[in-house]
Length: 507
Image 1 (cartoon, rainbow, N blue to C red):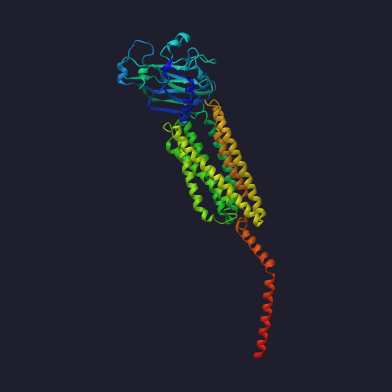
Image 2 (cartoon, rainbow, N blue to C red):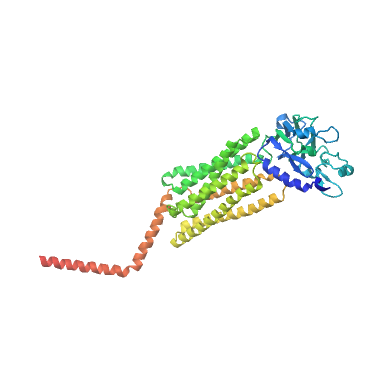
């Protein structure tokens, strides 16, 4: 069918792109949005979100309904297109609003004689499938003949604009829903749209994929509160013996608690209003970037023996601060592109450009951490400091388990996304994000356990280490310096005898 044909395999990647770019808002705003030519149609993506069905649509009150609502939707065409308008011919000046569940994606479009699939009905398809030429091909769903939903909006006469009346489509089945505005009229290639759509779940505007995270952040906040109370009790009890390292641990705990609380309130605001203010989201993202940066620097410093084996990092301080600043900038930029706004203007290449530096810095930090940890273990083993060596071995084992778990989870995450291109497993997608917060919290708990404040913290960190060095020096002087010791004693005895003889002579 030549250039007018459209392969539906083009549609899934487009739907995937739509999901990625629209998951950050349940109120979708369209400000002079242009249509895109895809195959034999012109279309605009209106959004893609997981929606949970209303508990009981027949009896539920209005505030717990799930729906997609259209408000102030207006389409505008060029004067040229309006001048070419003709009332003759079906589908002239027609725009169709298509809503379908991801499971019914094959119910949009068709193919003639087993060829490529087309979104818009062609003469051949009109004969074979009975569709109306110039309209979107719609095949009723096997589970509900009323779906997919197709709503029509048409320009009248030579009008430059057409409005869609405010309407609401109730959602009675849980699923991943997609919205497209489609025109099969080639004269409407320069079509633009304004307005907004609201997507609501029974509990609020928070997208179904993100809704479980709000409860998760409540539980994480409680976990941080428990850790904070336990640590603070020990911290105040032995505040005179607190190490500099323990001050850093306190800062990480406080940042973690602050971040979890901020995420909860940010999600709660999102759930109530349906929008994510740029300022609030940026603030939450910045706190998270600071927490992740300080956490990695803490692990690096512990691996170097800071506060336990060595009192300072010495010449490495500037290098540690430099890598920390670089990591913060990379993480901040990546998180802003992922969470702030709808990020419609960020292409795949730009997003990849921001992911790669962050991944590279993480790999570099892991290599530096294990290299430093190996040197610290060798140093402790050479000094025969069994207590410290045992502590660092436990920390090394915990860190190794965390790295292995991270690698395994990254593999699972890649598999999860590769095998679910249409986000049909959206109800369990929140686990991907939650895992990293759980892993970070678990590793922080282990560090708190291994380096908990106690009355012997200062002696353990510094005095005991100096004592060990003093014992080694004293042992060497006793074993290696015996002859010199004998000579010095003999000389002292001879000198004393000579002094006595001189005194006798003087007398």
